Structures are given as structure tokens and as C-alpha cells.
Image 1 (cartoon, rainbow, N blue to C red):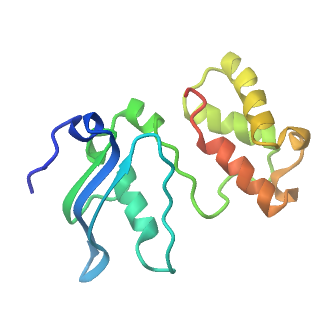
Image 2: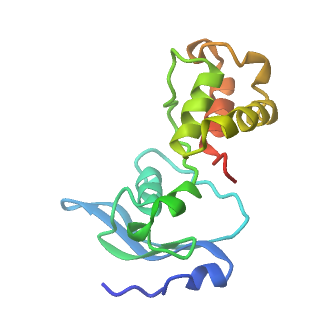
Image 3: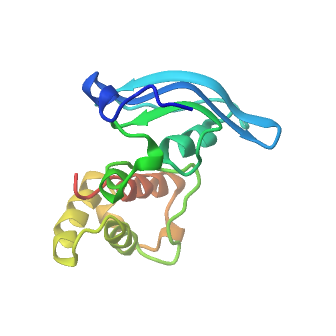
Length: 166
């Protein structure tokens, strides 16, 4: 199917994300069916809905993990199938489940996450300390993550999700 959006078209119009008729089928089952929406640049957006309504599938379509069965999707001016490493580094994805390492400390998890973004070892230390302080996890920095409360795990997940280069 031909793309409606040329590279950068939605970014110029102020949209961070734009979909039109986005659909994903697994076999004969629709996971996402004909959704159209736009998210303006600089806005925080969340999906809320009952279990099984397509929230996770939609996010996976937006991040390029899944390819749509039909419809168009444009994220930061690019179709997700065309994301390069630089584009992927601009996207933070925080899954519902806690996916960090329970036997590592907060600082060790943040260090690991920063390394995935390609931040050099010398630049990591300052950024990780700033992030831990900003997210309110600094006083627990040497605690194993399995010993954190659910709320503290969410804060840590958010800190690990946000690109340290931004």
C-alpha cells in the first residue's frame, strides 16, 4: 500500500505521531482495526482501555516491532519500518510490566539502560546521577530493584526509558 505521508510531512505539520486506517491482523483475528489519530509534538499521550483492546499492539506498530497489515503510520516524520539507530534512540517505550533486572541496584540498572542508548561510560555517571535525583530514586540508588516498592519500580522504569542523550 502506498504511503500517504512523505518523509517529514507530519513532523512539519506538528504531529509527533500520525496514523490513518492502521490495522494489524494475526491470522484471521484483528488486534487493531482501522484506527486513525494524531499526537502533537511535545505532548504526553497514553492509551487506556480494557485488556485485549489493542493498546500494546498499537504501541508495537508505532515503534516498528510489528508491521501493519494495512493503513499508514508516521512517527517523527518517518515510517517505523525505516527507523535507523538515531531515530530509535529518540523514542522511549515503557512497558506495563517491570522489565529491569531485579538483582541489580538502581544505579546498575540505570547504567545498563544508558549503555543501550550508546552513552559513553564517562558521560553516563553524571547523567545517571541527575536522572536518579530527578526521578526521586537517588536515596535508594544502591538498593536491589527487587526490594523496591511498585511505585519506586515505576520511577526506575521511567528513568531507564528516557533517553540519556536528550
